[in-house]
Amino acid sequence: MSNSRTVILFWQLAILAVVLVVWQWGFEWSRALLPKAYVPKILDPYFVAKPSLIWQSFLRLGCFADATGFTACIKGSDNNLWLATLVTLKNTWWGFLFGSASGIAAGLVLGRSDFLSRVFSPYIVAFNSIPRIALVPLVILIFGLGDLSKIATAWLVVFFVVFFNTFEGTRAVDRDQIAAARLLGASEFTVLRTVVIPSALAWVFASLLPAVSFALIGVIVGEFIGAERGLGKLIIEAEARANASEMMVAIFVMMIVGILLAVAVRALQSYLLRWQPQFEHSS
Amino acid sequence: MIVAPSQGLALARDEDRAAAARTRITVQGLAKRFNASGREFVAVDDVSFEVKQGEFVALLGPSGCGKSTILNMVAGLLPRSGGRILIDGDAVETGEVNPRVGYVFQRDTLFPWRTVEQNIGYGLEIAAVPKSERAARVATAVEKAGLAGFAQSFPRMLSGGMRQRVALMRTLILEPEILLMDEPFGALDTHTKLEMHKTLLEIWERERQTVLFVTHDLGEALTLASRIILLSARPGRLKEDFDVAIPRPRDPVAVRETAEFARLYSHIWHSLGEEFRRTRAD
Image (cartoon, rainbow over the protein chains, first blue to last red):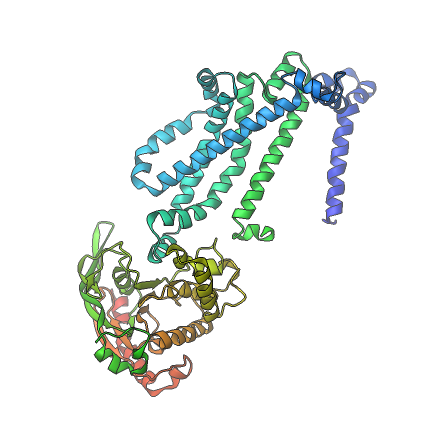
C-alpha cells in the first residue's frame, strides 16, 4: 500500500466518479434489472435529482441558459442564484463578524474581571441553554423579513461559541507571563493588549472555525423561516415546486461558500498563530 | 558615598565595596503566613537583612523554606503578613512596579508569540523607546547573550538554556540597578547551568548590579555570590550570613577547585544538612 499523493488522489477521484455514476444512472439501471420491490427509492431522481438535472438547473438558475442573456437575466429576476449567494454570503459575513467581535470583547471583559463574570454567569448559562434556532421566529418578528434578521440570527449563534472560548482562553493565560509583563513595565491595558489577547488567540481561533459554519447555518435557517431572498429562500421555493435539482444547486453552492469561508479563517489563523508548533510549516 | 553602579565600583574589591556602598534593599522583621484549608502556617518568620549596592547576595535554603516567598515580597508580587521592605529607603508596595528593579523567573515566562528579539525588546517597546534605538539595543543584547542567528526565532525553537538567556536579557536590557532572581537556572541541566553561570558572571562582573539570587543549589550560590544568606527550614528564618571571599573574575569550573570554595562548601553543607533533617522530622 502506498500513501503517496497520487495514490490518494486516485482513490478520491475514483470515489467521486462512482458516486456520480450511481447517482446519474443507478435508478434507471436498477429499475431495468431488479424486481420492483428491490429498486432503491433513495436513488429516485424525484427525491435526489441527478447530476445532469442539477447541472441544467444550475445553468438556468445561474442565468447561463437564458434567452435574454446573462446580464438581463440577472437584472430581471430578484432571486437568481448569484444574487441569492451574494445575499447569503453577505449576511453570513456580517453575522460572523459582529458575533465574533462581540463574543471576543465580552469574553475578554468577563475573563479579566472576576466580579463581572460572577455577576453574569447565571444569565449566560440560562441564555445559552435556549436552543438558538427557537429564537429565529422572534428575531424575524423583531427585525423583519430583510437582511437584518438574518444577520441577527447568525450573531445569536456565533456570539456564545466565541464568547465561551475567549472567556476560557482569557482565564487560561499564564499568570507568570502577566507578572513578567507587569515587572517589565506594562500597564493593565498593555498587559491585555500584549499578553492576554495574543495568548487567548489560540482559543479564539479554535472557536472561529465552527463559528463560521454556524453563521451560515443561522442565516440559512433565518431564510427558511422568513426571507425575501437568499439561498435558503431558493431552497424553500424549490421545495414548494418539488424541484429537487434546484435544491441540490443551492446546497452545492452553500457547500462552496462554507469551504471558502473556512479556508479564509484557516489562513488568518495560521498567520496569527505561526508561533505555535502545529502552524510551523506555514510560517 | 553614592557612586553610579557600573562605574568606579567595579575597581574596588568586594569587601571594600560592601563597606562603602549604600544600602539598596532593607528587609526588617519580614513575615509571611498562609492559610491552607483553614490551617494557618508560617512560611517566613521574622527575617531581617540588608543588601548593599553592588552586592551579589544568594538566598540559600532547603526547598519550602520560603526563600522565593521572600524574593516575591521584595519584588512586590506578594503581600507581606508583617515587617517592612525598603528599596533605596522607599517602602515596597504590593502590586507596584519599581523601574529600578528587574526580576527573572524560574519558570519560562517568555512570550511564545514573540520572536527572540521581540521578547528582548518588550520592555523597551512599552517604554516607547524609538524604534531605531530599540533595534540597536536589542541587537547588542542578542549578541551578548550568544543568541546571534536566533533573533527571528520563536521561543519554542530554542533550548531551555537559550530561552533562559532570552529571559535574562529581556530583564537586563532595561538596565535595572537591582536584580531579583528566583532560581533562574533551577530547571536546567548541569552543563547548561554552568554555561549560564559563565554568562551571568561575565555580565555581573562588568556591570555590578545589586543582585538578590534565590537558590537551593549550594555550588551555584558559591560560584556566583559575594555573600550567602542561609535560611532555616520552614518556617524560614535567618540562619547564617557568610561572605564568599573567592576572588574575581571567577570561572564557574575553576572556582570549584579553590580552597575557599571547599571550606565554605563543607561548612554550609553541614549547616544545610541540619535543616534537611529538620524538614524530614516534621
